[in-house]
Length: 305
Image (cartoon, rainbow, N blue to C red; front, side, top):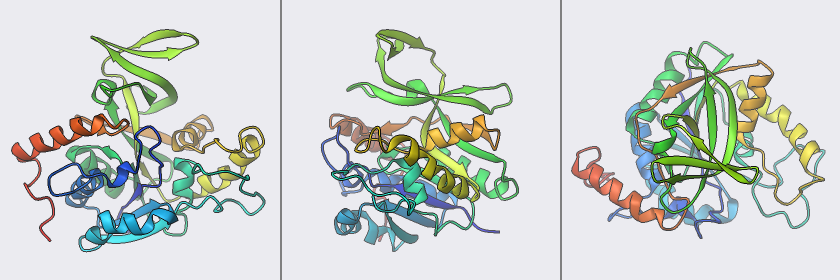
């Protein structure tokens, strides 16, 4: 039985944040959000991590994070290379933007031999969340190719105080499975209300609405689907939006749900999510981590190396 592995998507460009937030320190020891995610992942049971990075950032990433984690876990590096697309397609001239989160997983296709989880490098997911996804991958995903999972967060626990956010809003049925994911942009808190903007007006969302924060659990067979659908994505989008189109994991999952190829189980977490969408979010994350250390969630010095 193959042990679950963890993919960390760390190739984003941080355009709204204004820098490589993947390697931005959030505590007095210089540790990053990735450090805290991997600390939680390791105590949940993960032993192997794949970092998806941009080749031009390889050395700075290794110096900031990689070399440290290599002493603690089995580490592999995968480049999210613009040229790593099906052979019948070419990279558009002047394309700089990565191809998106589904392409990040696509780039890992030669390394995946068992169940795996996927996270964003710049998101804090919480201790319980990693335990939930590891247990799912270890106990259930080993035996079923027809069910995948996501850790679901209550929307009110995922908002930024410093601007609007985009979230995958999940329609969850009575059995705890997702019927559909709708991507909503411009979501913000307005007093006691949560609002999203669409078609020129603002609409409300209920507290407790489940959203996806890109913490996924997959059987290895999902790789075949991602690879096959990569060509379809390029065929549909390359001519109309060559410089900006992106191949997103939630879109792949939605397509699989609509085609009735898989069922998507929601693992509802009690955790507060933290992220650094905007530079001003950094202080909030630092304060939250500091409080969790005081409360004993983390040791004062995260890694004793």
